[in-house]
Length: 93
Image (tube, rainbow, N blue to C red; front, top):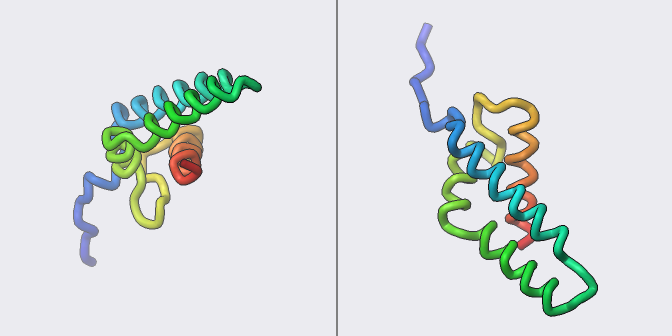
């Protein structure tokens, strides 16, 4: 019987999960500021896009995804949903 090689890159790091959660909370707060005021809405949307597409956030998100965009091992169901929602938001940008 052959053993699977140890692949630590497939395990989630808690600091990465916390970083994604913080950014997603920030995005939710910004989305709440979207209003009928076109200028404020444009500014909020630009900030959301900047935050979600920053290299730091993208690298963190990529570490939490493995093959085909699926979340890595070691995440709770809530954390998996967070990572999936974050990817959807990034793809919407």
